[in-house]
Image (tube, rainbow, N blue to C red):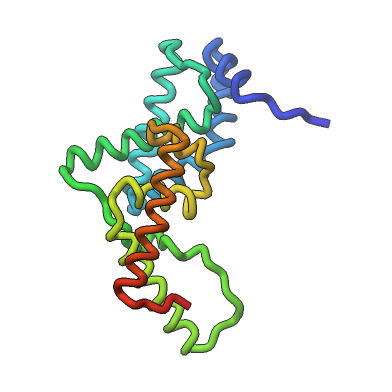
Length: 192
């Protein structure tokens, strides 16, 4: 039986000159890191650029011996990616809105039984309404909501990626849900 090599051992192996160790880390986490970036930036080409920047930064940090094993490699990598995405938007002097693009649909992960035309129209209308409601949330709440529900990240991972405590991440999620409920009531929406 083949035992999985730990992230720590792969990092040490890479730092000792084994390029294959880095390749294993990349393969192990490429999908999750890219998805986390895509959720944040909602543009495939920009996500690819930030993904590449993330691994350049990871490689440089590992080569310089500056990696501090404070938790999981994945959380550290996602935090780097998150910070690079934030840096991009600071340079652009704007924060992204939750909008679908041809590359990514925030609610596209929902799978329903075979629908008739009317059910599809209702579902699309509900998705649009939810996207608009999410856009109205404060940026910190919107970010946690997207990372948790669409990125399937734990609150511990969210806390590390956003450089806040777990309690702060939980609080932001709580307020995001409270604010969504208020918006639904204010707009008298019936989300089926």
